[in-house]
Length: 290
Image 1 (cartoon, rainbow, N blue to C red):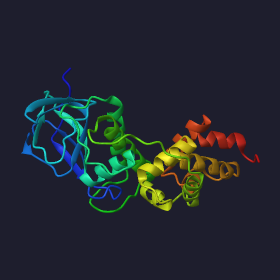
Image 2 (image 1 turned 30 degrees about the vertical axis):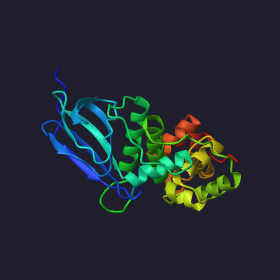
Image 3 (image 1 turned 135 degrees about the horizontal axis):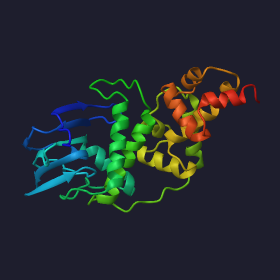
């Protein structure tokens, strides 16, 4: 049976969590990109099919699971490398964003990172980039500022994780990664902010500003201290705070909303991972318990 062919369809969108950046979710078959360049870093992850592109005097093939990074200002093309076409997700990230992140990683000012001409074949990195892209898109990425759904804390943390992984593993201009020193007072302040209002959206940048750190350093400090990133720690707290109302017989949907989960299915998925059963079954078994 022949594989279904991709259509030519694309959606560009923005997120207030990444000022100055653009994101693209697209699939192509007939479309061919003429030689062009971007002021930003073009950081794609190929999800299916394969793309062919001319770059730095050579023709390259990027198959599913690869990351064909294009450096700012570098001319390149793009077209299908197989009959079905290709599907991908792309970050267009400003030079300042990547340069600042490289400096945070190194602990000192850095030159703008530069990435190899060859297609990056790093499945773990590809998965991190795709995950961050999906989370940001799930927030309702658009030309406007609204973020109606999802968890901005988790999305921004995933973005910082993906791009710092790219820089550390494949960037050609960055310093040695310095260890983060323990800082219990800052961690305590971040926990306080995370716990203050579990229903309010919170970005990693906002959390970091609370303690006077960059988003990268705040995430790393918190994760080293608690063994989980801020959004995961916050979800664990939400689950713990859900137990009391569930014992008292409050409806599962109401508990989910009151504890800051986006919907009942989101709550159920996290609850089951932690407790092994759905919240309704846990509630039936523990009704009235103290």
